[in-house]
Image (tube, rainbow, N blue to C red; front, side, top):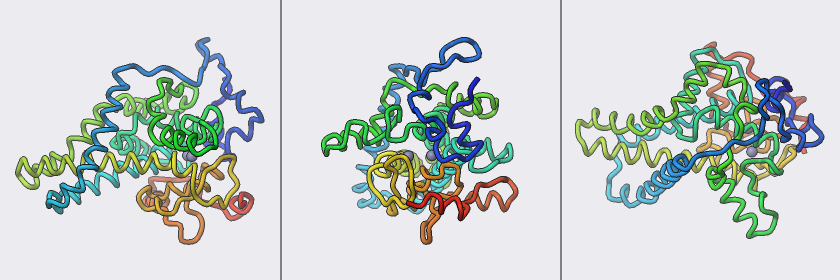
Length: 335
Ligand SMILES: [Zn+2]
Ligand SMILES: [Zn+2]
């Protein structure tokens, strides 16, 4: 079987899979699998899943809207801040270091314990099971800002109304698309790994842990129902909503705005004001120019917390073969 386009990216570090294939539509063509079934890009999502998705997107967001008056009325204590921030950092780095730089792009090699820990930490972000997240994101790189990209803000055209509609689609509308990226085509490496596949299947359990851990901590530390409720509001709902919208801003805002100091085949830009909240992911132009690079903020002054964390993992001996930026690679990609 021909390897999927992104497996080649991870293995060889080429700029974008589409570059090795002159005709992007060739990648989309159904391809026979080992079992004789066609390997389509897409599968279909069920009704119940759509409803659950809607709830998990709107309820935390409503909590954010309510957060301002609640905080104003002093409904925010130090315990809430500590719990929410800790959960934001663990689940956020699970996405940026784990799901994105490690599982999608293979920017480094992790030992088994770190590999599983990253799969679990990213699952706590409630952005879908690891296999699906990685499949969608590999497809995004394979077709970035062209037909086949699951979330391009340029999907409907270049006029202002088309871009506004496209920004909504790229931000969260695409999550409601009924077709799913085919994991057997895009993530055969993850499906083959029994541990990672098991973490992916157990996603609903991690959703429960992510939602219930903050109130449990808040309740035990304060020894009150009020403390549990307050920690649930800040540490579960507000934290998940903020992380969702920061992550989705990379898909919407970072493909519409920002500087483009590097050559990429799409509209990806570097957006400085999202750098800290996104742990360095908003240096998105460099990322599309050199997807396997472990550091996205490669220029002077570009804060990249995820790269710093990967560096710490390397120091501890848990991460090896880290693909740090190389001067000649960067120079070749400068616009
Ligand atoms: Zn992108
Ligand atoms: Zn990526």
